[in-house]
Image (cartoon, rainbow, N blue to C red):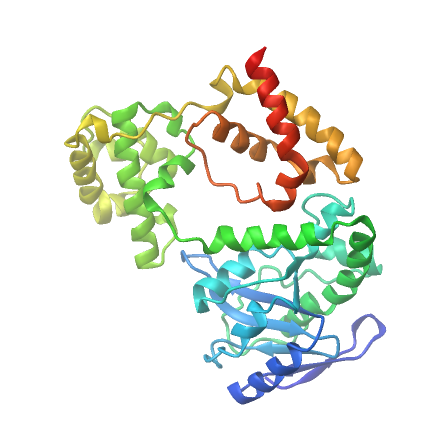
Length: 386
């Protein structure tokens, strides 16, 4: 793989490979003196729990730099770059990139600017894709042919490298356009906070005992059955991580819920609920043993049953009133209503107020609390006294 120039879209841009840690250290020192750099990754996660990082791309406004983590394994100079609070790291739809970099190298992130989040504040929609972002901000149409490519193959083709370079090439122009709009509106820091919330969500210490709350259909189970689910979901999560395989390669969520509903589940029940024979051979005995173990626990150790949110009689009117209040505040602050709050965030807030089990939601963060807490508290108090 040699250095090359991008000639697409009427401009020539140098693309350089970073092949040794000394060069990376020198560049990292330079980047730490800048306002902003663009970052992207290419990875494969087809048959694994964790991302297999295949390429890291950085653009500093002068050159695009490509790092092959299969070739250069010491990426420690990037630690200070990603953790810096003064250097903005611009990414698009940053969740999986941050998760991949954190799980692979334990990199911490500060001052991340997500152009997808920023575009939502600017009124371009909640989940604007990168190609559409480039089209809207720069009037360019990108080639999408490499989206399903094998990034772990070596050598990478020229088409793959061009695609990877373009994934960061247009992030900085988009950043400057969106930054100016956000600074005028007073929303720039909101975008930074939301990106930080994304990083906190993908990097937080895992509480495996709480994973059962995330399982769709868990509300169907009584306390005893839910205790079963709690144990086996925790076991599945840790097993998937240990063996670096997708959780669905073990058992799927709906299969775990259905097996917990059985009075005395056995191997034939695993077949009946649709479990794959290979999964049953590998993991079936351990799963059934865990259910037996759960059934021997004293009832006072069972988790509180989960009531489907829509079945909480007091929840629906609260959510309706809060949504109306949030819509007024969103208009006053010139923020799209769907950016300020969505149904999941409202349900999280109401679940907290009602002291019901709920999935974590880190987007109830500083800037939203500053705009909404007082109005939400007043609304809940009014409803409680009526």
